[in-house]
Amino acid sequence: MLPAALRLPSLCLALAVLSAACDSNIGLPADQSDSLRYPIALVADPSGKQIFALGANFDRLYRAGRLRTIDTATDQYVVNPDGSPIATEIPSFGGSFALDPAVGITDTTFRLFVPARDDDSLSVVDVRATTPTTMDCGADAITGVCSGDRRIAASSGLFPVGDDPIAVALSDSPDGRRRVHIAAANNGQLSLYDFDPKEQPINLRSLDSVIMPVGLNSIIISPLTQRVYVTTTGTAAVQTYRVDPGTTSDKPWVIAQEPSIVLPASSAVDYGRGLAFSSDNSRLYVAWRSPASLNILDVVPDGSGVPGNRLVDSIVLGKKPSGLAVAPTGLGGRDLVYVSCFGEDAIWVVDPAERATIATIPMRLGVQEPGQGPLIVRGSPFSMAAINVPSRGWLLYAGLFSVPPGDDHHIVVVPIAPGAVNRNVPDHIVHVGIGGTP
Image (tube, rainbow, N blue to C red; front, top):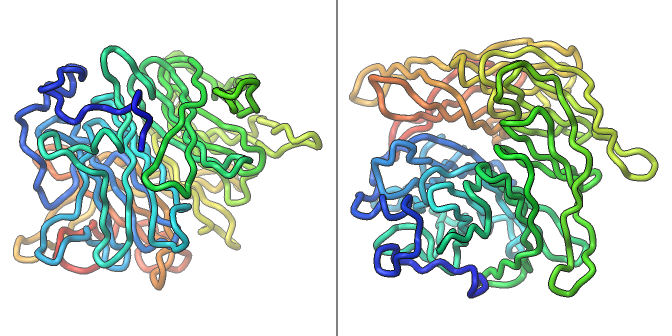
């Protein structure tokens, strides 16, 4: 379990130690809807058979957001035998989360590490991909969110995982443990934890933290060099660091910051967003908002193991680039980069080899819902996942923030494999329960 100093009491009101954000949720109902609202992040399991999708509850209609599972064979939300949603409540204003497949000896047991800004927390959810999938984090009956043994959260003015944690990444440690890297937006705190993947329940150990520029947004770790890259919205540079051995027993590993990577900037103050590596990990793609572009960095290490971190090119994009996904769906199996342009209601498709945009995918489609007539879906794409789905090929899943008059926030499915019917055209939405099949 989490160390005693980091546990958060379950009952916000009774113990009166939480922030006003948590207190303001008391008395709100649980979200029992069939769909997922404000899909802020999508993560596929290693098999490609399911997607974990996080709804952020941005309008705070309910007491918390929700984590749900999508079956990629049918593109339906997974439900219990009685038809009730399989969902785990996560504090509102969640962010990009990470999946750890190292639990157990099969490919059906995982942990999800989920940040949330509402209570400045990190929740750890145990997942077992049985039939149906189960998710467990010892949810509290009153607040709905994960118990103190599964959640680090702010209390009494302390912020163990930073103020507004927004993104999480995982990496291996030479001592056999697993590291958890947490980026917080409001105070720029980068927190480093680790854990023994064989221990059950999990026991997170705090290692180190540093303060970077405020506005941290996305975080990714290079498999080639173990360097960590972090975007920030308020600074026109990508922050970088490595993890070095510490000098004391209470800090066996420490964060060693390296020179940031300065990138082209316009006068608007809104810069780095999503991050993704090429399939061979030699290129780092950065979604950049000012100016709107896809920055391509060469991160191949030299003979001493130090990455080049050199800007190769900047490809002009539509308004407000946000999320990134990479798939080998280009000519001859080379990578294409998919960029959600939140301000354009479209996804832009970039061929890095050609250094050019080769397609745009408007996020608008008409869907025939059973017994309800046609449904017109449109909205601003944000989170994405490109998945090689067994027996179906490469599909792109994109979470939409819809506009009035609709209040559902659909996840749209786009075929992207070469030769696919309706390639680069929104084909259908993820269905609710026993809704129609694609």
